[in-house]
Amino acid sequence: LAKTTQPISMDSYEGQEVNITCSHNNIATNDYITWYQQFPSQGPRFIIQGYKTKVTNEVASLFIPADRKSSTLSLPRVSLSDTAVYYCLVARILTGGGNKLTFGTGTQLKVEL
Amino acid sequence: EAQVTQNPRYLITVTGKKLTVTCSQNMNHEYMSWYRQDPGLGLRQIYYSMNVEVTDKGDVPEGYKVSRKEKRNFPLILESPSPNQTSLYFCASRAQDRSNYGYTFGSGTRLTVV
Image (spheres, rainbow over the protein chains, first blue to last red):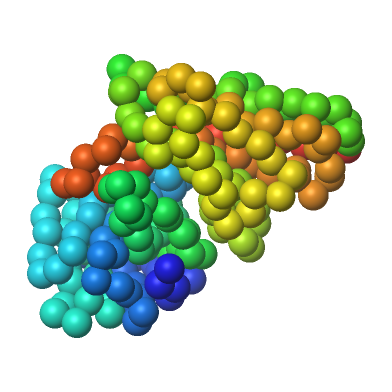
């Protein structure tokens, strides 16, 4: 599975846009990019997924360049409650449609007033 | 409410005493997985299942067993727990849906083996 590299930590202030970039140089053709959010002592929460170009939902946007070797999670107008660890994962789609997930170390986002 | 339920939330046990952590999902999902989370090592996949009676090893399967006799349940079994299995464990599930690869995670089980 493609190894992912993210910044260990980022700081921001309320109301700002936060962009977290993830590198996945060895991504394969049948790999999807997914992002999760995790609060302390809670299970990760799925945020967004993408294969290429741009994807947007009610929580975030995901930008993926044509070569797919990186992706950027964009969180618009963050608030204190967005303080969490964000994981970029490359999901390998296995035969039969199942996928194997490998979590990296994640990015600790801290939002301040 | 759609959810993945793990029990117990907290467990302290002694070395060698067999234990089972239960996981149940009410979303009729085909895929289920177990992870452990340790400081500095992140989340690592232990086992996963693609459907009833279909399971496979993840990245760190040693010392663990799983079974998938029913679609909704995916218990994690530690036949002879050791202190290095002290960790925070998460169960997760997702549907066999090629348009959605996001997993739903449980709230976690904090296991301490002394």
